[in-house]
Length: 372
Image (cartoon, rainbow, N blue to C red; front, side, top):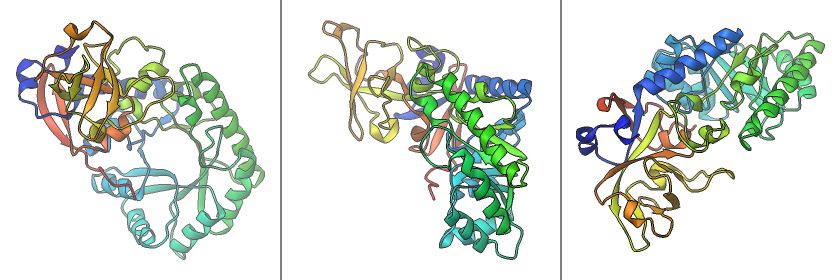
C-alpha cells in the first residue's frame, strides 16, 4: 500500500505533513458515482465542501454532474469565479449585513439556488432581492438527521410563504445525517430520506406548488435513496473517501481503491512508550472520531498502530505490547487515512497529486477557509 501511493524517490522529496491524492483512485470514485446516478435517472450535484477545488469540480462536471453543491456564499463565490455555472448553497441562508450584497452579486454570476428553513430566512431573502429576479429556492426538510430543516408536513406552508413573498420556490432538499450513525444505519436512513421527501413534496403540491427539484444528499445513502421521486443527489465525501466511509461501507478491516486521499507524515520520534510519533497533528488530521472508530486515523502498513493522541503538530501512535520491533523507523514517511476527509482538506493550501507512485502536480485548495 505504501508503494502504491508514492515510490521511494517521491516520498523522500515530499515536505511532510502533506495531503496526497491519488489521481486514478479519485477518477474512479468520480466515474462510479456518476454512472450510478445516470443508471438510476437521477441528477448528480456533488457537494464541493469536501474537496474545495475548482479542478476537482471541473472533473465532476465533465463526468456528468449537473452542477455543484456548496455550504457557504464564500464557497459559491470561488466556484462561480472558477467557471462552474450552476451552484446550490444547501444551507439555510440568512443574508444579513455584508452577505446581502455578496449574494446579489453572486446571483448575477451563475445559476444559483439557495436553501431555506425559516420565515426569517424568507424575509431576509425577499428583502435582499426586493424588486429584482430572485435565485431559485429549495425548502430544507428534516428527514431524521435532527439538524436543520422543517418537518416534512410543514414544508408546504413555508413554501407558500416564500412564494407569496416573491421567491422562486423550485423544490425541497434534505440531508440524511443519521446515515453516519453506524455501519448498519444507511439502508434505514435512505428509506427515511425518501419517505420524508415524499411527504414534503405532497405538502408543496397541496399549496399549489409543484416541486421541480427533490434533492437528497449523503455519501452513505446516495445510491440507496436515488429512486423516485428523488430527482437529485448531493454526496460529497465519495470523491476522496476516508476511514469513516470505509467502515460505513462494511469494510472495516482494510482499504480498497475508493480511498483516494491520505496524509503523508514523517515518523519524528519513537518516544518512550514503545510506539512512535508523527509530524501530523490536529492541524492536518482534524479531531473527528465517530463512535464506531478507535483512534484518529489508520496508518497504512501498520494496522496495529492506534493514533491515540493528537496535539497541534504531533500524533502519538501506540502499539500492542511486544510490537515495538514492527514500528516504522525514525525519518520514515508513512500514510494515514484520516477519519473524516472534509475538515482535513480545509486545513491545507494544496493537494499533492500522485499517479503511478510519482508526484505529477499540485492543486490549490481554492475555497479553503471560505466559511462565510
